[in-house]
Length: 242
Image (cartoon, rainbow, N blue to C red; front, side):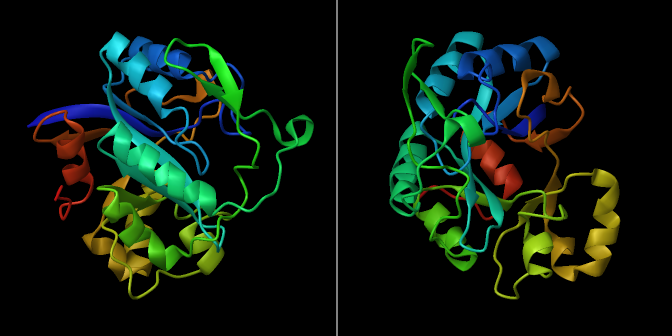
């Protein structure tokens, strides 16, 4: 077993709320400097900066998961993690078809910048990525699994854009087994109020939108090794690659 310090909720400059200096290479470099072992870039409803993220991670020797913060039809944010770049990009292609044709207005919402594997700007995303997709929450588990991934409802006790903030309850047909909690001190109370959570793993990450907000090595998870498959198995004990 290995113990990995992690930050699994980070926004690059592709997210309109992310600073322009949140390039994939800058994120990986900062994570390396502060001593993190494992990170994930989770842009809003897009994985288009994952190729650049993969290239930077290889250069710096950083362990990574490929991710996305999906906004469901109900405006619930869900972190979706994948073991391979191909899985993430295939999921991205589907999600793109489920985004409404609402254009981004950079002067109002912020830029949505795509980087290439040589750490250069290669384009922008025209659709507004913070829009709610047409994907309902109850479809996310199967969709993510079809792409060999794991779903983790994001910051579940946040007052907005969260499972409990938007719905007020955990749907009885839920199948996820890991959730993100903004403040770990809230976890015992959440488990008491929502018995479903008693069988779930909990993680906490920074939800960083600028380089100074990445978590120091505050939180750790144990896995059989540092491979993406082992980490996903640690997050969700039912995870398998078929």
